[in-house]
Image 1: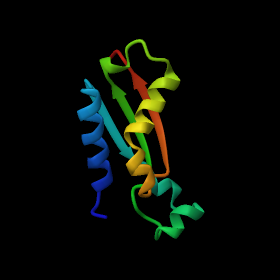
Image 2: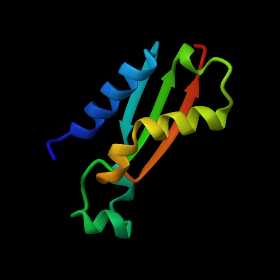
Image 3: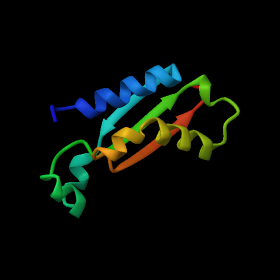
Image 4: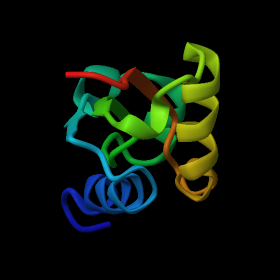
Length: 93
């Protein structure tokens, strides 16, 4: 996988679906390189991300509903090696 390829895909998916005012994606995979699952992938590869999204699309949604929505949007990424997300999802700046 080319460097930052997954991060770019995640950003495109979130922008298309949520029309966010803010989207920030930080690859945190290096901190998890020692985990067994990551070692099986060769120790690299965009597996863990911190993501912040501010979108009006979240208005009226519970925190759990926001998280479920983002996880559903990224289901294909989870099936191809994405392991974990740390999410901050808000409807207002």
